[in-house]
Length: 223
Image 1 (cartoon, rainbow, N blue to C red):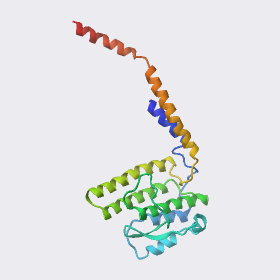
Image 2 (image 1 turned 60 degrees about the horizontal axis):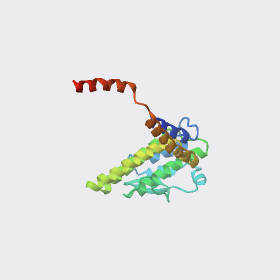
Image 3 (image 1 turned 90 degrees about the horizontal axis):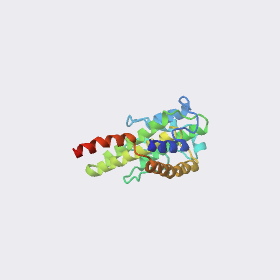
Image 4 (image 1 turned 180 degrees about the vertical axis):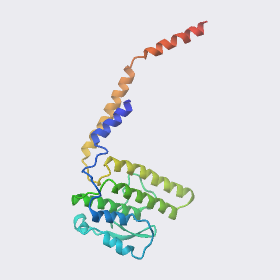
């Protein structure tokens, strides 16, 4: 119970699970189309280059400040942020740069839709995350084998766990710059709550039932 209270306090103060804006419906149709084309894993297609370029929303370049680049992700033509990089909280010891560029572009699509006041619904971010995970696992399959391959997949699984929590924490809304004081305040509550829990535990009296149960045992030993 004490641990649950501590966690609840942290989540309450940090605002975890609450999107920064109201997410209703599918959102901007052009950005929705861009996400669908990005995560399409149907394989090579002669018309994919044209589809990718055409899927970039008209206002994306002027709003986000860059033009997405055509890149190769595991043998499939895709789009990515040209200077994107892997910024996972888990150190990615295996090269995942192409997949991270694609994931960065996917998140920028979410940000773009929010900027134009037509944010994509809660459906979009999990799909982009899942697509990224699948591409990272595929990269492990293509570039590593044996123990190294297992380590590569383990790295991806650890990344999945952390990114999933972060996406949930932001309510599956667009990734935005957040006020760090909310989270610093939540962390400040942690030692206070734990200290109170320990003090409460030390001062707790013995349960009366425990005393009643001890007497027959002692009597039995003296017979």
